[in-house]
Length: 324
Ligand code: ADP
Ligand code: MG
Image 1 (cartoon, helix red, strand yellow):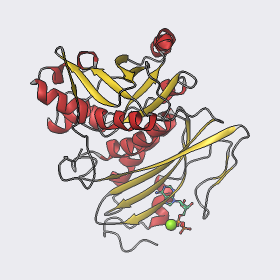
Image 2 (image 1 turned 90 degrees about the vertical axis):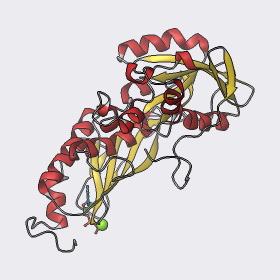
Image 3 (image 1 turned 45 degrees about the vertical axis):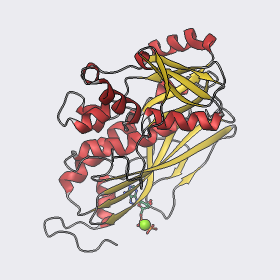
Image 4 (image 1 turned 90 degrees about the horizontal axis):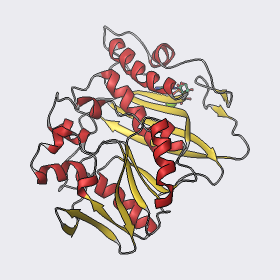
């Protein structure tokens, strides 16, 4: 039961859930949705489930002045991006919401952002928790399904593979540093590459989504695969607003900036034509940015010179990096 809410908003936790978060069940797999102690889901034979959770904290993962619609959208988007990065189909989510007050206008916008994106992908909200807290914080747990054994892991990259990224890299980091720019939507409303990613099963050897900076995230994939990469700086897709910046600043935003939610994956070179076709069919920009090497570590080829890139991306609890 919620503690006292503001005088203007006489609504307890259960009314709030009913008013904003209960929706009809559309996925036949959901035997029971919101309302009991637990949801009931009946998995299908031959499928595996991928399960992930991500928290967004106000002022930490989005600027304090971010509108409620964008917060709802982004809280779901970052989770769907993780499910997509496994090559899985997102199916259900749970929402743990901590809010300072039960402001109906804020909640209506928040739910709209979340449900708009959920509906685009046929994702069902099946439960959660609602608490009053001085700090706005949203935790979403996402469940996705994939044919048994078909999920794309970080550990499968092979020597000689092309390293491919979707979209352009560093846009969200630019938007964070330059509020109200033409790239603001890239920070506020990331679009998870859900449909495109599912076509990469059996094609991509390894994949992840870029949330904490290309260099750091790709570094995880390299380590887990026991390989390295030479990245071609000139091949990395960069928005013109970033390209106009001094080179060191560009490199900082592109390699260490967070919040892109683009995909980074590896494929055998012979798969490139097939990949390009799929990318065209799904309207997804793709670009080869480097090649996997037996020599471990991340090297950057820039202006005729190849050097090791050792800077990191964003890390919580690390005083040397800045918050996205
Ligand atoms: P319990 O006290 O048994 O944990 P709650 O009273 O917290 O149950 O929640 C009642 C129902 O509402 C449960 O089905 C729960 O999953 C769901 N629920 C609570 N908060 C949310 C939310 N923010 N979004 C979606 N479902 C929620
Ligand atoms: Mg509860």
